[in-house]
Length: 412
Image (cartoon, rainbow, N blue to C red; front, side, top):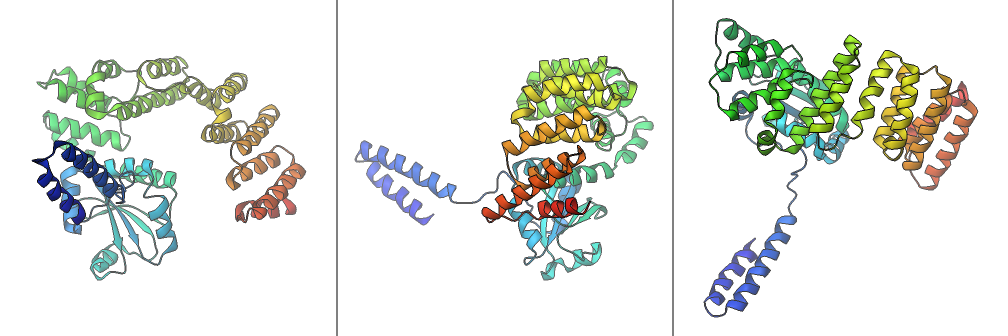
């Protein structure tokens, strides 16, 4: 950046003599700074790793009441490199891990890592740890993970980190301070324990809290879309979007609505699905597919074949036909709940064929060939496998899973 400093100094010399030259200088300076900054890899969209000491990480974890996520790696480890390049840089992974954890990468072959290695028994790379602020292991996994699997691993760790007990005692002894009750409700929600009774008791006591505190409390306390708390939360929508952002609001509304769908399934009460749909339609910024996804889930769990057939056909035409992720979810749902129904098996083959049309990668071909086989079309499945393998070979691409599937089909 030395050249930038030189340019700045030269600019001030010209500034007093010639305004036009000065304006050109400012424009050039701005362009140079933009170019210089763009050359740095800030990794802003992926996981932001903490670069302090282990003791400092423990202090921050205690202060923020978070777990520490540790990537215990080695420089020569191929899977470690792949995760660093393809997973830790993923925007969705970054958004989740940066908000939920203190993140650290520790090279297990550096001298300063020996204490950690002995304390937590690192014997393979990468090993992924979740450790609390008291230096206690909460969750651990060995081996590289894909983005979606890493997020699931993080969610599992959070659910294991149950701190509700330390707040429960104070609450039962009569402590109704805002910070205590908020922390108690948050801890209960984090591990999936009921919190509605505590939240209602607290709000019914008419605590002396301002609007910002109440909005924050409701944003944490509200867990489903069919409760009185949901209506109160919605009354603070504008304020919450300003403080938390539209994405966080949408995520909250979606989570609450899916919780209500689960409740509808538990009690076999479809009206709750309709309530969830109404909240999503009115409060979520882009919830078009939920209107069909929620009933589909309900009908699948209730084994309501006729209703599922009708709804899933609409869903395919309106949403999934041009969306790879939605198509895979639809195929998996039919496989899980209606595997022996001939009509839906035929539809699944149609959906899998469309999946390959959208993206003819190996993963989608495997799904297509498996769907053919499970639909009683073994010979067609084998033929498609063979044809796909020829295509990948012509493109100089490896297709190990497809090759394994072909060998399996040849044996059965």
